[in-house]
Image (cartoon, rainbow, N blue to C red; front, side, top):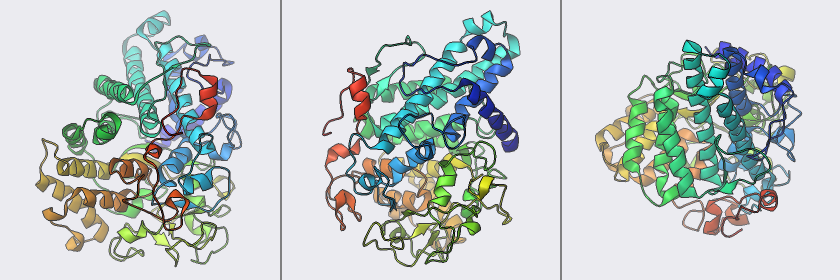
Length: 534
């Protein structure tokens, strides 16, 4: 189904070119050239507009990879995944970047300001996605459908499209909840126009996301029955499990029992671990893969951009062989290779060896794990698990030999195993330690290829789960959230190189557990109050 849905996504690029407008505020009036009466005149129009919502996760603009729908941000930086990954990884013990682009050194050193362009970009991109969903929901009410003579099975299909749209909005509100805490808030029920949105609280936004995900559950397709790359009940449960695992941070009230409940729902569905860990990160990761729950789909020819998995691959390799012998051709981007991203030494230290000899999840290259200087290109190891190469060792078509067709998993089964186990370890009810051990050892059996890496029940401490998440999920956009949950993102109890701007690492004030509301939005909207400390 991947190819058919990617074909639909490609057609959405043309649609987007007709409907493009910059939407960085939740209350922007639509200014589309194609009127709503034309776009939504048929059931097919509703499907096409739904595809548009998904396409905005994988594109920076309908006008090509050199353009951005997020104002004030270089198009190369403006992809959702690139912004999300940067905020979740570069500020942690897992990654560092030697580029000098404005804002990157701040992230490397935990010294970001209220004007950091990457944090502003993530905030704006999430709000843009929410704005598009709000308009879609305004246009797809039962009253609107009736007025357009869309009835019967067609109306039932649109009901499902609405549920998917609400999921995509809930996901973006979760991003804002997790990263910024107290963003502006509007839904389809609010008037649009020149009215400044009110600011919500973190606890209220948590309750909203929770209620939305529960409300749409019955209208979504059953787990693994929707088209590849579209949300279903499995994605809904997976986000709820993640939300509940972090509820103590978001609201002050733990909900580990609920995390067990919803991770169990995912696990009890027809998802299974992909036998080979490395195959999860290859260009044909859509084939025979029942581990991924929801993906962002990329196409290296149609609908390209310089973010997404194109960024993840190119930002670790050079076009010519580097000191570790890495060359872009071996990663499926023969004319790419920008280099820049590496690990901090804490990440490879989680593995018995950095060469993947024992734990095959350790997929690194390089000879020097220690970073003495951020701008030293050979300091730090490179993460090499993402490849625009198929499992049969072929390179898929790639525009200009630069762009990737590797899909990125927003949710996969392995995360749900680890959510279940951590929630049990933290005292949640409804689960049991024996089952948690079974799930952990399933991951470790895959990693080691045998039982030599299996652990005992006594090993399953909360700290073990933080380390195991690092081994299983590194560079997949989880680390900042995990470190905040463990009380290690700020403060001095856990250090990593250049945390706080010091080579050995130093304490970071607790207010940095949240990112700042961008200064430009504070100026534009007097209803907003900055997060404490900034």
